[in-house]
Length: 299
Length: 180
Image (cartoon, rainbow over the protein chains, first blue to last red):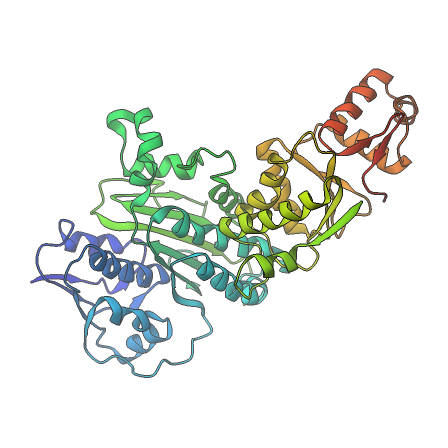
């Protein structure tokens, strides 16, 4: 049995460790995902784990075993974040899973939620829109008039799943303090799908221009930097363009991991690489959007 | 004939979700289909699309509802569209998607004191549109005098605005679609 250990802190960067532990795709033989020592997961981490389970199910593979975190407070938090509600559909869970779904903590603005179609996008947009003003003013110190832009950003990001993935996905939105990376509160949106990925989505229309250079990285650049969609319609590609424009204004960050590459539009406060290639493969596409609190804002 | 289409009502009829936001392309396409059927029954005239009870429209939905509605308009039918009751975010989203398509529409946003052009328009287009709105319209010579422009420049711009259904051309004058 292949054992893939979940990093102690599972987020957009440490997901690469988990992906490396999976080896080739699909993982050879039975898989055990070992989260026993995990102390914390970001919304990106939760969505990515469920994406992994979903991708294996859709590939017709045996459901992986999943050893839940040892620490009770970690399990409780994962339950509150909505992870266990769906994890049982894709994993054979081992360990003590909180039975009752506790109330969501205040920092979980949207628990992990599946996106399978347009109705789901409407529902999550409605949930986020209802709390958007509180999030922006109390958590981030932004003006209440930013509410519409914030919700539109989320809506456009969610639609990448329904428009391009060819299958379902997961979204979650949390607010928390980024002590080490930024020293400010942030709102983090995570959107992950188990679909075909950017390279395959754009291959038919864009790969010829790149020839041998066509890769996960060039596909991400085509979509995020050049704002090109697989649809010929000139109205397409506006969603990502709008997200970039909004994040530029708020000094936010977007990063997208697809297949073996990750591309980020890096704000001045971060030291991430804009493009990272030759990463270990992870199924589907994972988007993370980070909106930091206004400088000097103390919630 | 003037017809008013309330987008919040169309949204409730066109899709089954209980939510009041114009989001996603399939939703936008369904809403546009509803608007097109209502407009084609009127066979010309002026249609006011009222957004005042809609909370949010995202870019994808704005593209489907407004841009594609204008792109599909039959040039042989004299039918005008004016957007009403837009909030700041809706105004921005629609302006952005129309600019990308090089389209334009007349609108009366919630915060505006007079109608504006959203989307792709030159400075001359906007000046003449404002002049027609402010004066209530007139013949090209009168509007040129009001603007203190050469008549040819004013006439050319008026003709372009009329072609794009941003002002109405009568036999002798160019008229605003809506009065301030």
